[in-house]
Length: 214
Image (cartoon, rainbow, N blue to C red):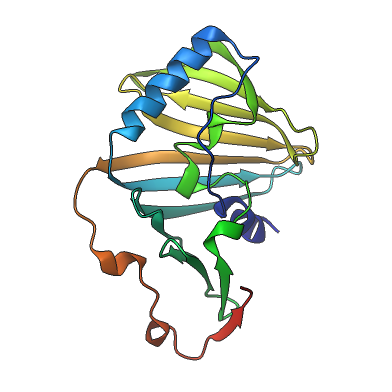
């Protein structure tokens, strides 16, 4: 279940307007994060993913995100999954199932995942600043967010931000009692990413069934 749920979290393209009805200090912090992110043309992030359910069963994974903001292109590499978007279509490679699903990029859902981890908060939320927390030697600013749409399958998101105004981690609390956390372990910005990162090549996946959902 958790291995499947990570796919739901990965599909997303955030809009860019600012939410109202929020704590002024929290908004100022998020605006600073957004301003810094907006100055980047590309980003590469190594991240960890941890899912925990109500029975304290957990699933963890490690991944890498490659992002070309200007062309809305990305690649997400996980142990058993891979997503590639050229800005028009998204190829989802399910290695265990030996299946490739193709969807329109513009039909992505508004779920939260690595490809919009730096921008998802810009609309659809109210938020409030909480007390700082310490991880190792790092002091992190903490903001808790709630969706304005009560129909969302999650009720709270916790964002922790480091002194460089970069997101340290994002935790999503869903209504079933499960928790999903993305932790940014390394972030590289404004460096050249080969265009081949955003091109799907079927020859790399012999024997995979292709399901075109466009």
